[in-house]
Figure 1 (cartoon, rainbow, N blue to C red):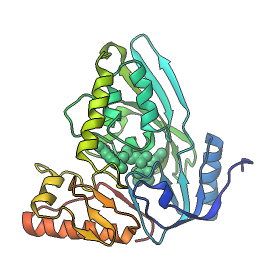
Figure 2 (tube, protein in one colour):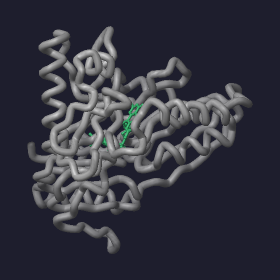
Figure 3 (spheres, protein in one colour):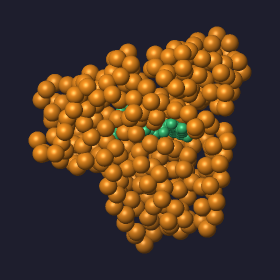
Figure 4 (tube, rainbow, N blue to C red):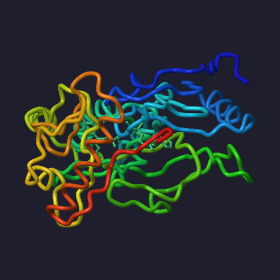
Length: 303
Ligand SMILES: Cc1cc2nc3c(=O)[nH]c(=O)nc-3n(C[C@H](O)[C@H](O)[C@H](O)COP(=O)(O)OP(=O)(O)OC[C@H]3O[C@@H](n4cnc5c(N)ncnc54)[C@H](O)[C@@H]3O)c2cc1C
């Protein structure tokens, strides 16, 4: 095992999530290098521990009972390598690189991914897994459009820890999903855009995108962004709003007054509170509108 990889026991996970809720990880680590990452994965395999991967925790609901086994957080894997070819800006990112850091790289070249990345928190790995995207009709608006390839540490029995390379077209991308690389851990991704698309107005666009979000979303409170994916032909926020659920509260978890598809932590909410709000919203929208809402947020741990 690499000298410096520290595997801690019984670590509270709430500070590692944007909702600021969740119990403890039985084992927890923050690898900083590929070698440490492999050590962590070997540790989980050798000890027979279940592995849970956490990026920036901006799209997960972690159980109050915590997570058994090893929780591996990628936030310290944040190296990036910038290559400017004749035609494209290419950035090879480790999965824990924050999207805001990637944004700065594209902003420097005045390239449109900067505007898109302004809207989505979290890191590059989480962006790929979720095929994160924005509602605005801009280009690019989803991760699939900016991702050239990903490199995955395989967790398959027969080729454990082999680095597998997948080009964008090898993967199956859909609304808030990217499949075809599992079981594994996304170690790196190449993100790129044509240099010929430089836009002198890009800084203003990023500013105005930020202002719109600030106006529409409760960014001053802990949340995970939109809780439900939009069902075909509907907007989840509108459905929830039309059912009179704005402000609906269980404990300290509340359907945001500002944006009905957000559930905010008013301070001291539990994961159970949030889950109870989610279930109530789903039940009410199904009864009143006949639409089954599906969560975008990923449940982790023992439920
Ligand atoms: C205020 C706010 C606004 C938001 N707005 C948007 C928006 O407009 N559009 C949008 O799409 N999302 C939005 N989100 C949700 C979230 O930011 C995105 O889904 C983001 O891409 C998740 O990245 P993350 O690093 O936080 O992933 P996490 O939440 O840590 O993880 C998400 C999933 O990916 C898995 N995962 C993470 N990293 C890896 C890896 N390296 N290898 C394998 N699996 C991995 C995790 O196990 C988990 O299943 C918003 C969230 C907040 C808090």
